[in-house]
View 1: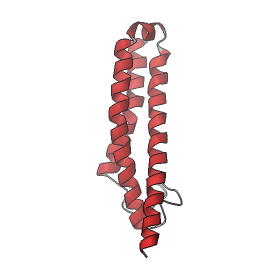
View 2: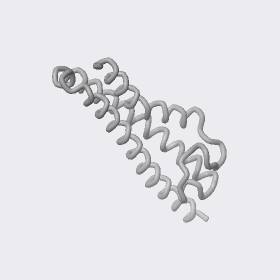
View 3: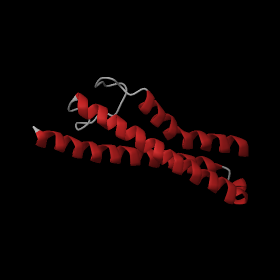
Length: 123
């Protein structure tokens, strides 16, 4: 059971890294409904769409470094406690993944909105 919970926790923690890598190396080319960050702000025009995905990719990749390091430290320093409560590895992994989505979503929205405002001021 310990191996299963550890692997599942690692999968959750690595998910933002995978998502950030996909957005960095395979960003959506055009505004679409299937792949990408679809909000009113990000889909205003193609330039804003491209900017939003660059910001989101970078945010996810930077966040991933910290979350993977934090998860590894939890696994190392709380080993005895986690051995007694095997499900906590899964919970920690899931929490780190959800935090990554929240951090990336909020950062992307705020920065894209500011970027969009500078675009409208220039015209």
